[in-house]
Amino acid sequence: MKKLVLSAAIVLGSLSVNAAVLPAISITQSVLIQDGFTEVTLDAVPAAVKSTIEKSFPNTKLEKAYKNEKNEYKLEISSGDKKYTIFTDASGNIIKK
Image (cartoon, rainbow, N blue to C red; front, side, top):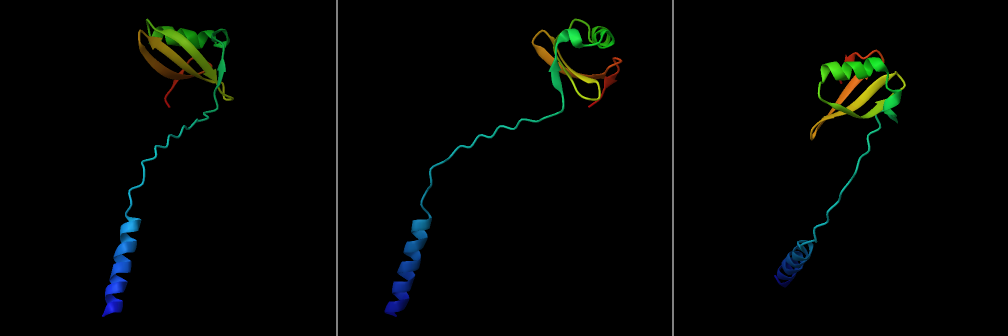
């Protein structure tokens, strides 16, 4: 009987040690997604692409331009405080992505 009580006390004691509260740890992870586009100057954007942006999205400003190996353009445009990302090919046709 003493062994049973002693065993129960040891088991309950070890359970209370494992139930200790651990401090909260905050982990922040950043992920950089490579989409194959490299930044180009606004002068390097073809006139057909600029014309499409002006006609399709009036009153917007071309902020940044990116190009990939397929001659597709990723364009960041803004209208006031709103920003949009548009994809086109070299001929100015809008690509849905």
